[in-house]
Image: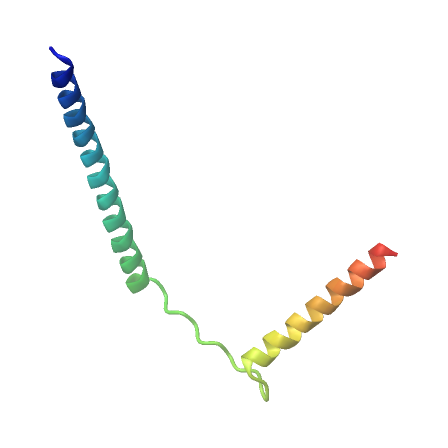
Length: 81
């Protein structure tokens, strides 16, 4: 066998190997998408958020975020002294 024949044979084997891996990955992606759709259909529905009287959910989240940031700053300042 000459070098040309060996090179062509190696390219053919590389193509077969890469093709098998590519097909396997396509199959894996298709199965995962199918499982995701099946889980979304068969699973329980998402619960609706319960509104808090007089406040919007974003206002509650904002107040909580401000409190957490304030506590973190106070902790940092107390530790630095």
